[in-house]
Length: 282
Image (cartoon, rainbow, N blue to C red; front, top):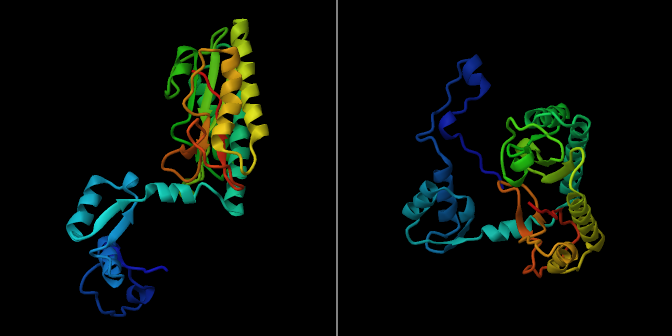
């Protein structure tokens, strides 16, 4: 149901402007709080339990709810919304396919300029410009391009320059702007020659991710998907430790959301889930 209202903008029809038509003014300009109060009253909820997304409410808005409905009991149902959107429709899946295609194209363009002496900012600019050209989405604000010691941090691209033997890390995504869908993709490349152990590690991490993808099927408990990669990497690198190997992804505002691919999650995979599978070592 859509219940329109003018709010503070004070909408007018064209005849009022062009022809001088005099329409009766509303006694009061309504706002979202007024409409909420009408709804709660109409549904007889003022002294009932009301579910709200507390994870995303501001403190002032929550205080307003408590003041306006002092007899109501507010319950956090944020996890129910996240659970519901963890399985996507065919239309949503197509949006993600389009987003991933554009992000992949951006990464490919960046790969053509990666070399010793290139700056993090040049890498970032290349990705951003290519994504914007698509006309379909924009780069995520958190898109990170880092090299050397910065590769171990969550950081914005800066003045870092790719040096011999560096790991060049791309952790970036694209957003469908006002449709809100987002992506989460990483690439890690080795510049020039490097310690053979580093090449060995990268190959193992990559193969661990391939094993996760191969294992994924409806009905598989998510913790088994986690162990498909985690155990494989840890067998060769006993120091490996990673709390999760990926996550669901949807509309934000958080990029990562439940279900997380970790050792405790027993929920089975379902057809229609969209997951970022991450086998990382920082």
